[in-house]
Length: 452
Image (cartoon, rainbow, N blue to C red; front, side, top):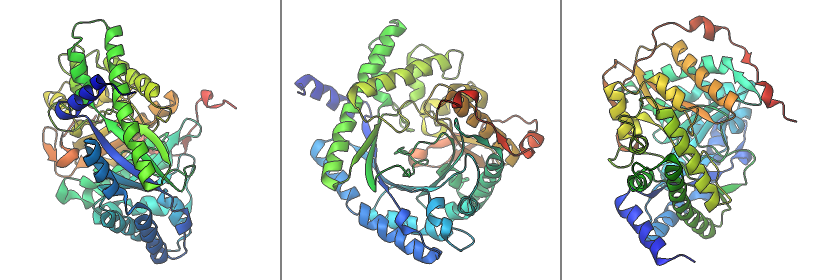
């Protein structure tokens, strides 16, 4: 039974604290679209996506109106295209990216994810075709997102893939130089990627998923920050309990929307991802939550501990509220998408090394980081390798979404607009990692991967 008090609290969170459903994402299996001809495969992909998701946006808008809950994005994720396009005889898979882009626009969604490859243990021909296609595909499409999983706790880290992705990111930045390297904002390199993530740019529809599925991502950094204002100066036990209770209420709202969307679309409900996903708007920042705990500026000593508490309490509150919590579920720290992170980076308090330490205890990794345009491919690969190692050893998802901004130097700013915000260009270490990256091969899985 929902009490009047709970309803009033939820309305307050929506009206004044930036609470929203960040995304309803429909997963679509494309495994039945394989064809030796890329042109025929593209036609099948377009038709399958349009047929599966034609009612996604109208349904989301209807739920938004009827329940009064903002639903910011409607998105689609598809089977990793390297699996679908692996049998195509064509040299690249750009035609499949164009089909995804056209279909997503026809359905009216904000983004479509799944131009992806899973290469943690090695490459197939389809994987190599897809990875080589990424720069052109992201330059020639508008709302297609791409991801590559280069490592896992079970498989180790594919360092050949890590080296390749450094070059791919550089090429993508160069091909989209007129928009500040925007293509790189739609490209994520993962370790331990999950199959049910509703958030872009890393969403894809896993091979173990149903034919179609509905996943919902909720967000509420402003709600959590507001709740902590009421317990200012209290011990950390009280802080953790406050975050947990707030996450519970947020997740219940997400579960309500997910069930309603599932019922109306006739598609199975997958998961609720309760990640605290910030935006550039004032009052919607994860950094400000950490500062509310007592830090003068996000990035100073104590930041990692504060983030660890936040991430854990969010997960505990979520699992109390739903049996279907999944995806990434925790706190995101994308620099360009969080006004508090932007301010901390501009002040010099928050740097890459501190962000890397923070990724040990948060949901994902180095997210929406702008670095100088002349940063070498090997340096980018080394950053990816460091982040993948954190994920592999700690049995968690980590990721890198980095933008070597063409023509920009430390202290400059790259403007992306919308939810992507603006990114201050951050310094990287100048010492070379070229010989390290050139070794190639595979970093073996850790001893604790042997669990069978």
